[in-house]
Amino acid sequence: MSHDTTRLNRERNHFAGHEAIWLFGYGSLIWKAGFPYLERRPAHIHGWVRRFWQGSHDHRGTQAAPGRVATLVREPEAVCHGMAYRITPEVLAPLDVREKNGYLREVTTLCFDDELGGSTQGLVYLAGADNAAYLGEAPLDAIAEQIAASHGPSGPNRDYLVNLAAALRELEVEDEHVFALAARLPPAD
Ligand code: BEZ
Image (cartoon, rainbow, N blue to C red; front, side, top):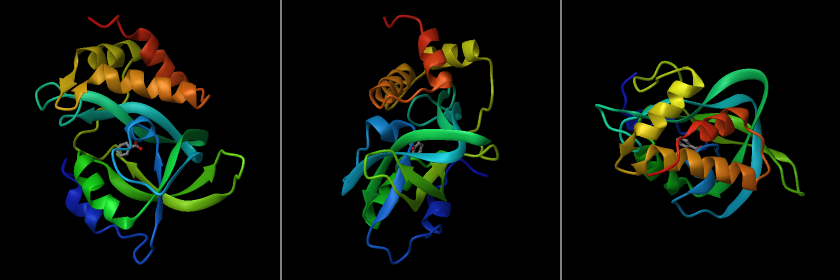
């Protein structure tokens, strides 16, 4: 699959005709939505873990020196916590462009973590192992080193990781992978 998933996502109209759609965020969306939303609620999805296995050539790295950002990897017993946003459908087109580097819209069941609880069907952007920007598993030290060294148009790759770790702590979410990577970053210059 090519890097640019914008056109593919435009055809993935899972909630056509709906006035509002729930979108589950597990990476940058937790700490920086960057789009208007109707409502925001902490939530989780089942069967996925967050991993820094996706290459970033357009935001947190370059073509020559890609950074690493989060995607989700299947793990049947796992739970991934993040933030759900209720959005109007017009929000998706710019998001498709912003997240065009291999991420595809998928339907998921999301469960709310707040006192109201409940669950609903929504969307999540997933970058699978078959996309051209996928980097896959590597030792934690190597991933942290790559993140520490990478910069792109959206800024230092380390900021993405540090902001994500802080947002997860704020949500009181335990994420061993993210916290282990953050702990391995050398001090900032
Ligand atoms: C997220 O934060 O959920 C997200 C990550 C990558 C692409 C789109 C959304």
